[in-house]
Every structure is written in C-alpha cells, then in structure tokens.
Length: 334
Image 1 (tube, one colour):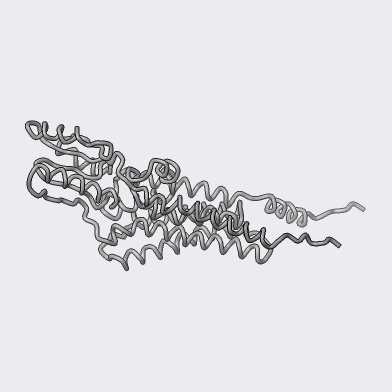
Image 2 (image 1 turned 45 degrees about the vertical axis):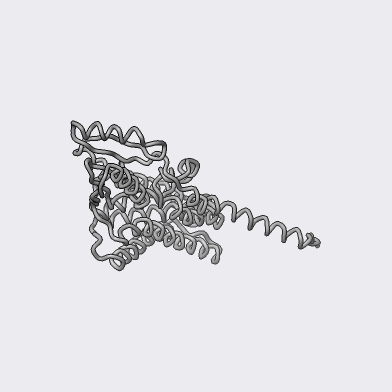
C-alpha cells in the first residue's frame, strides 16, 4: 500500500499566498494599470481652413501641437470625411467651430474636444460646438457593454457544456458543440437586442445591427468552445481575465494608452473590433472602416473557433472506427 506523502501545511499556505499575489500583479497590469497610465500621445485632430489668411493661421496652430496631439491641416470639405472615417477625433474649423462625432469612441472625443476648445479660445471668444451623429448616454456605453456581455454569456454556455460532459464522463460530440455555438449566438443576440431597446429605444436595431451582434456572439462562442475543448477548464484562466480587459483597454482609444498596453493588449483584444464596429452602426455610419474590419476579424474568430471546436478528435475517430467494426457482418463459408 502506498504511503501518502505529507507536506507541511505552512508550505501550502505560502504557495497559496504567492498565487494570490501573482493574480493581483497580473490583474493590476491588465486592468487598473491601463487606466492609471492614460495620457494623450499623438491624438489625431485636424484644423480646417479655406485658402487665405486662415490657412496661415491653421499652419501656425498645427506647428505648436507637441507630442500629445498630432495635427492635420486640411480643407473644410475633408474634415468631416476624416471624422466619419475615424481618422481624426475632432476638427477645428476656423474661425471658431469645434466639430466632434458621437460615432467616435467617447474617450477620444472628450480629449479632442477639450484640446480644440482650448485652442479656439486662445484665438478669442467662445467656440461653437457641433456634434455629428449625436450619441445618448446609452449610445456611448452600449457598444462596449454589449461586447462584454456577449463574451460572458457565450463563455458561460461553453463552460457549462464542458462541465456537463465531464460530469457524465464523456466529451460532448461534434453535433452538441455545433448546436451550443449556434444556439448561444442566437440567444445571446436576443438578450443584447433586448438590452438595447431597454436602455434606449431610439437606437437603431435593423438587420445590420442584429447581424453584427450575431456574428460577434457566434464568433466569441466558437472561439471559447474551441479553447475549452482543447484546454479544458484551464482555458478559463485565459478567457476569464479577457473580460476584465474590456473596459480598461478596449474602452480607450489607442492614443490614450501607454505604448506597452497599446502594443501588447489593445492591438489584438477582440472587444475593440466588436465595440467600434457596433458603435458606427448604432450611430448611422455603416460604411465606416471599422465596421468592415470588425466583420473580417469576427468572421476569422468564428472560422478558427469552429475548426477547433468541430475538428474530430482521436476519441471521436476511435468511436467511429468501433461503431463501424460493430456493424460488420462476418459471413462464414461452410
């Protein structure tokens, strides 16, 4: 009989404390660290002026931008197009009009408006503020909130499927995983649409918005189910903290994040693609580049997730071979 190995309880206590400290360090970097280091760095804004004396003034303004702001000197016709494409976060139209957009991430809009208003005030007088695609409080919050809810809802569905399979001692089959991915996408999309109507019934809920929500939800569900199948419950150590990254990183424009966070987290986090694409759709800019980018990225997540989730594993192949062997009828010759 094997004698159990007894280790000092103090060693386990120290190990548990170290694990807790490590979790605090990781989450501190992923969440609050990103928020604590927010500062403008090359924030793109524009100053628009017609040819003539105002053009010279525009060039003078742009020459004093510093590192925090990146100025573009443009014509009045170009400014609003750049704003719609989210290439700039605000436009100062000389002599004294500040133009921003509700379809742009609120964090970038707020800083851009402050900068442009301050510049306009130095020229004398109070500038006029004009907002394209005005956004309500729900319209500003909904894109990121719905993206995070889609992630959590689909993650719960995938985790339940994996845990249920372990409880009965058998991995869920291909049909079960596919059913779970599609049904989670449909049901979560319905929940998100309900929240949109509850928060602000004036927000559009056409087929473009519903289709984008369904693509995001199904893409998230497929990726999560694939990773849970591959890694088991251990995948929660990756998928769970990503939810915490959403408000801290994806809620900011990249020019406000520390360069390390911008490169390591913001550049690839799935929430930003769904949130920014949805923001454009909700505020009447369906042709914005981030909608197209979001569709391609989310479709890629869906394809990769389906490949991981539905590719037959060794156990499935063995079961198929066993079933085939059981169905063979041996005919003897007497």
